[in-house]
Image 1 (cartoon, rainbow, N blue to C red):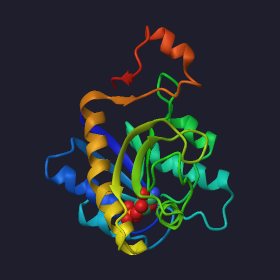
Image 2 (image 1 turned 60 degrees about the vertical axis):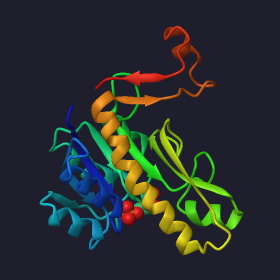
Image 3 (image 1 turned 135 degrees about the vertical axis):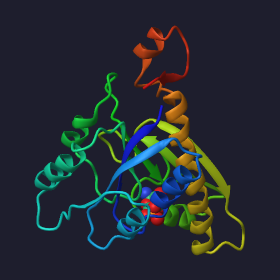
Image 4 (image 1 turned 180 degrees about the horizontal axis):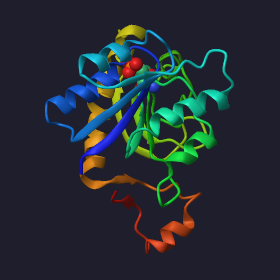
Length: 221
Ligand code: GRF
């Protein structure tokens, strides 16, 4: 099925652009109904406009989290959305906001891309911390969002090798290129086959039993 999505961003918007390009090239069966940013002047707004996508600027400055999220939810609810896609949205979503986008199994229909191999290096400095730590294999993660930061079920990961002559800039650039491939691919796989992930065994013993021992969670939407 074709996915109706809203993309939330705070800055440059290169992942948004990769998603929109994949749609334009027929590689991703989706429609971006709305691009919402919390920072006026974010590059993501120009990218959305170039592609003829509706935009909403909802600044958080001067508002409490709850006040800001009420505005965000009001914008999102104007559209029929299958998923909320976080592409460099630098705000933590509260359980209250997430509760508006719950699927029938209790997972949130919110997807994030994170610049590390989670659970390593959560937070806003994924590439920097991996580089500073001296990892030899780095990567990116696309995951469902849950109530904890950079924590929800992993949908896909892709790796890249740190080369001896990498600078932080070349390391980040290689990672970002992989993000731009992986994110549209994951969304396309959801459009085709629904959400799929390995359950976290310590959280999901009951579900495993219900699934008669299968070790893969799938859901068609
Ligand atoms: C990306 O590295 C993404 O993984 C992280 O924030 C960055 C956003 O970049 N969550 P862009 O705005 O998509 O160019």
